[in-house]
Length: 248
Length: 170
Image 1 (cartoon, rainbow over the protein chains, first blue to last red):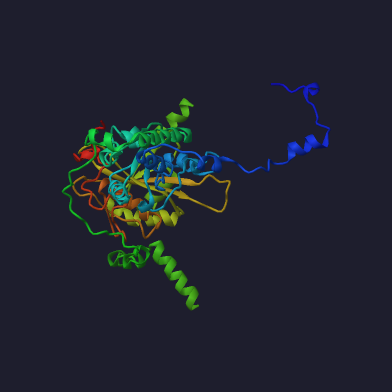
Image 2 (cartoon, one colour):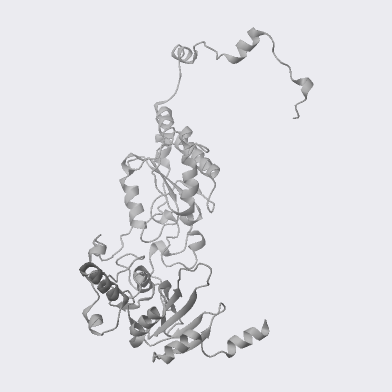
């Protein structure tokens, strides 16, 4: 619409301007109206409503999917209006959005995080990588081909990576799912077992990354055979120079 | 353009290669790559004196250390890309690439950690992916794969284990 100068009218009266500028100072009637009314619902609905309105996601993610997910946390896409507060502890989280490729090194970590979350818990598989392995699904020796092989997934969110709006869509779909959840239906729904349930027969290896990396004696001096070979190694030459500087 | 290509093909030696030969560091000149970087092949027994000589020549910066598999059943290769950095920002740094060919059943090579310390994690990664053992490396352990992983996944003859997680998606 194009604004034309002759269409714009100015309110010259002081009263009109006051009305326009001042906030309505009346009290809202919502609470009174509600408390004087009767709301008929079931406890199940109330329970579902409370659950779906305060889905707290775990602050988990990697790669490009998490960049999109991180955009959601900001004010532009404003995550919090759905009642989503990112939690850094799995004990406080209801929802895990698996953003980013999951490989064999990360898989046990993801399963542990999922197991540490309190029931009821939900999973959104975000991005192609966590649905099928994505672009790594054909010839990778370490990418897990879909996170549903590790944990049960409620909503599959495709995209590479999905936009923040798509994440909203997934969350709304999850809310609908929670809303439809009921104790009577639960008895009829049988979940197909798609996630991993057999234990690997792997040998447990002591962690070898001890954090003493820089203090290792092998890093302090070159091996004897190398010193005895008489090759003027730069590392030795630098050490000699420093000694001369300190002594002289 | 065609003449230039011909010239570079005809060329059998390079400044660095000539200098090394003059000073008695035996090696094989493998030619120039598309950016005219000379490629030198050296035996693993002479790698440490050879690399020290290159350092003394002025190659003070190790741009990249990596490995590759030259084919199933063929040799594993450890390569070192070196550059000569000076205080003059306008001069294009002189570069050289050193390759060490290693037999697949005994892929041992001395570590150049005591010459260029930046090689530390790069040699660990090459060990992790190709199983090339860098003798004298201060902390030669897997860097990317899980601690208990069996095999070296970037080798051409590597077979991916039949884990449930790695099988086809639904």
